[in-house]
Length: 412
Image (cartoon, rainbow, N blue to C red):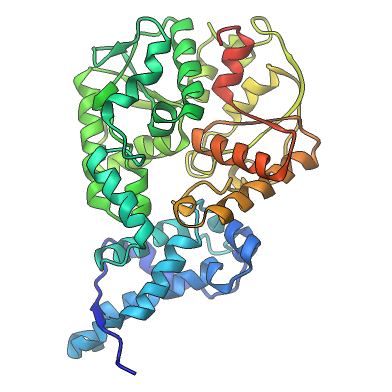
């Protein structure tokens, strides 16, 4: 048997806190049952604590005194690294729920991003993601579609300002502007902005993907380029506010962009639910009872991971929903403890069946409280939950919050 080729490894970007977290993890396994992937396949590699041990091994190899004295220690067999890459990309949604389950408060999600970055720089991106990354790099969106396709949904509306100066920019996002299922969210959000008499515009063809997929891939430089482009494009319109209906875009725009571009963008970022809660012309006193007819349905709400756990937006959607439906009930695993829908972290690009299985578990959570309507506030969550509901043969309806508000207002 011929020896496997060795690959040089290097690691960068770890903060002092993250290095401490790596050494703090004692592999107690408290995070295991918090992980949606582990709960489905019960594979030991899916346990977040064990995933950290791979990164710790790489760090020790690259930064130990022995690696300086004996540089060959920085070489790792390709077969071993390919196995690590398969697990790092294929058994994680980057939902961050392991952080909630960790008694030491270790941010496993960010450490996983560093691990993916290390593997990516060693040219160990799994084959399906290579094609995905190529399309994203060329088209500036994960679907590989022409930029002009971002304007297709606009044709259904009147007087939408594209690339013009405005006080507010609606950052539509790839899923809402480029997919048929997501267009309903874009249309609903746009009509609500017009109803509130907001001075708003969209970037149109100048809108690039927010950069979330590049973070998930591990290419922080590409993520920085997208962040800088979008920031400058928004600031060129002299906008003071950015509104987005996508949890992924929200988390990037609000929390990651300042880190990526090295400064605070000159605009505030709001999720649609935050905006609607603030606009008394749409939601009087945070409660739309006077303006809207209550929907006679038993509804529940799925918190998107990047909006609630990583974004801090929890109560705003609930205030709106309570005024729009006759009965609202919480499903299990809610707020910052929300259970992932299965659609994040590029898992669906590699393990579609596993992604949908996670979504089916979430559908069962909603069914356990006898909900007829499952609401969420992210186009990716809506898409995966709707697919999961269909796969499970569930009668539950899945809608985005903006779609519900627009429907009850008689706008769509």
